[in-house]
Amino acid sequence: WKIIGRNPEGGFAVKTISFTKPSHDNLEWILADSGVSYSWPETRFVDTKVEEFIELEERLVDGDSVTYALLDLVGLKPVQHGGKMGTIVGTAFEEVTGHCFAEHDSITSVVINVKVGGQAVIRGERVKREEDVIALTKRGNLIYASCKYKGRSYSSAHRRSGPHAIAASMQKEVSRVRSLVLPINFPKERIKRMVITTTQAMQLAGETGEVIVTNLAGLSDSLKQL
Image 1 (tube, rainbow, N blue to C red):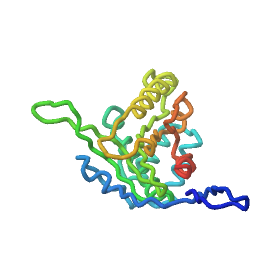
Image 2 (cartoon, rainbow, N blue to C red):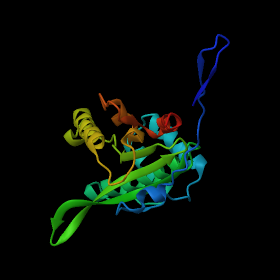
Image 3 (tube, helix red, strand yellow):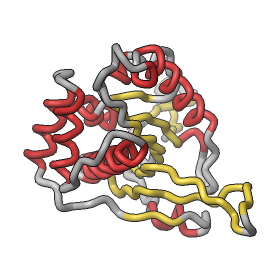
Image 4 (cartoon, rainbow, N blue to C red):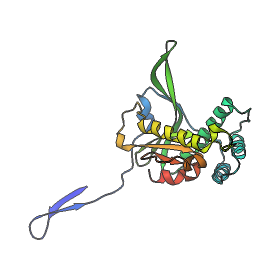
């Protein structure tokens, strides 16, 4: 705000006053006419158990131990290694991330499993693109977050999970998130983009520009700034 008044010399004096104004935006209203579908984060997790998993993951312990701890946290059973296991673990990581968003003091509301209508049509039906997390902060910023669980098992022996492959995969995801256009009417200056991943993948991410890349251990501090 600018206050204009007279100074003792008879001229004009301008005083600037700044203050924080709480946002009155509502995430449901923002997404109402976008044509997207979504679900709400799970509230069944115990915070102390979530914190224990986050600390375990950050310590860079054996990859299998972290994966099994994640599945145990969300109440899922491991299956044989392969595509199905990757899908299950990825879904579990999204659920825990959604919970961390929902419990953070700077977040007013959050949705997960956001399905967005795409342009491609297969067998007469429009293919939907699924995104991970959309959240609204108390400051009125909209966060789009992609969740990427990158295991560490056999990282030195298997090409797909080696450091170079992880780094390339992270750069690809950062590029995708940076260029993503959401089907909503919202000021682009207030849209913040994030990739939530595991500790090793975060360390291998390289240059990320305006896209925030963090592990779950650093998520809280990142959200405080938004």
